[in-house]
Image (cartoon, rainbow, N blue to C red; front, side, top):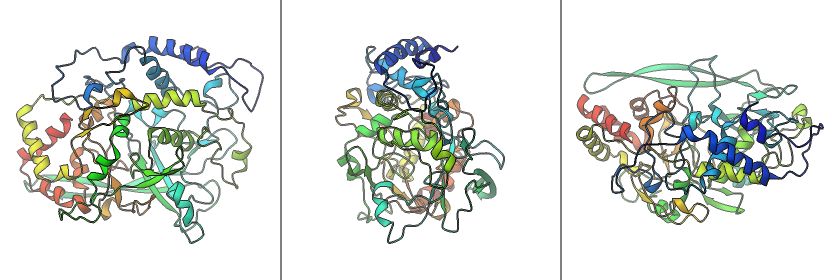
Length: 492
């Protein structure tokens, strides 16, 4: 039996559909001891450079690792007395959740319908997911958002959920299910390719995906169905992004393009369930979530079908009778104690350092990055404010290369599905820190919201809308300039 299995065994072997009181203190204490023992191979042993080294992308939290574990390390400045929390949360993030009832009491309740049975199933080695390579390929690290257009009667629901869930299938397609429950459908993707010729006569082939849902489990969805494919983003630096002061982000917003530079970043205003009020969105491809905690609980619910105190009910629609009748793993299935550890983990996954292995070429690429206008959205630098729940993230000078704002990226990247105040062609600027290690962490990693881009150059060439001038500037570069730009991006 695996070591972690020992800490999640329920105290009684009697069958049940609802879990009684459990001493989570003892479970988490044992989990901490086991996780610390098992975590030794995940720690970086590389001696850090001097503090003034500009490679510290995450300030004092930065780690210096270039292996496939580069996205899986705790913030470097967490005291040793606190690191047990990181490794406990990591254990629950990595270990599969199971069908209820089960002997693994602390992590049962999977489903009834779901996309994956473990967080790492989407965030591969804490990195980004990938699009399926073809119609019958695995789509586990990609999900499909669902909705229908709002009406006068349902427009008020946008206030809390950002979109109107489909009446038969809810807000997210769940393509897997526990025995006895029918999955909602099956994702199938096909690609069409077109070539882009660069100024130096180089040719780059871009693939455009067409996502379809086959084998609908609960009836035809109707003509109003709206879908949006999303690959899992990397986990690094989430707590640091949360610690950026709101006024610093709003300072970069220019919704009416008052300065005339063609860039009009906007804040997405979303619903914060913990504070029961609107808040600024920071997470997700359309900045639809305000905090790491809410992003985590939403993922537990949507991706794995696990209830929490924030989302206490399974997302079973009225027509999904077997889903409604399935056994529960407890009330809730993810206890607040376990949730706290997973959130602590997610907040403290470290950012790997920037690397300077080709300093002259990378410096040229950085200059081209700025001159082309890329830094107009991919803001290099912020200083974090006070994070009362994560003091080790406070007061850090960081270089995430994002403004966390929404930008119109043009028709080619549009999903035509609004989310809160984000339009169907708007996307949040994704952070670029650590991006040069994406394929080291997972060789299958792909880029952009739906994973269509196989390389960073492909991702750049898909940019449209506000980013079209920057994209066109890259097209006009010489081969040496383009290689310098990519060398800079790969150093991040």
